[in-house]
Image (cartoon, rainbow, N blue to C red):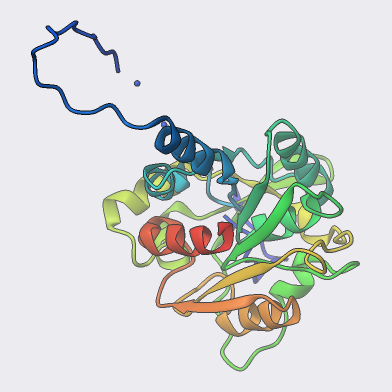
Length: 277
């Protein structure tokens, strides 16, 4: 494993009840059964909730959404956490799109970090996608690359990421964050023990994904929300805000590291539910 020297900035990142009915004498006092109207109304309301599809970025995995999923399910939302291959925007968008196609009814796509570019492409032209939520995410324009956005000059740039590379072929490699420096760069506001687990379970991204040009954005016809993480050390907050404004997204700020879905799951779930409504 060697340090990746040609990449100094990169932000893409990054779980049932039985019942027994007893016959009671006619004289027994019982609570009135719920009306059919109320029951139908409850079922109808639940059926109308869109499915939330969560897409992680580089150096994360679908397990990073665990606490967000618990909150969304508690509030009645169906949830799926996609396993992002992290091989490139087109490849990964096709994988997410296949998952979306298998889900009946409307969908809200949520992307973290590099996952933002993936949902942007996956939603393109799909009428099932009702809204997009970007969390400290890349939102590239058509023809733009992640590398270009990551290297964009800002007044307050983030430190160079501690990247390491593992060759996977003569002209290919996977990139990781150095586990020893993972918490500072990716999850500074996550407890040390939990951050250590995140570092150990991180999924690598293909180095070639940096230079892959984005396809047509979907946001022109899809409402979008963006959560800017102001304590981010992976994607400069200024770059996040630039992309959010350019995408005409509804912008919120939060004092968080890049791993916002881990450190602030309830606030992330609240934003997603706002977009879902």
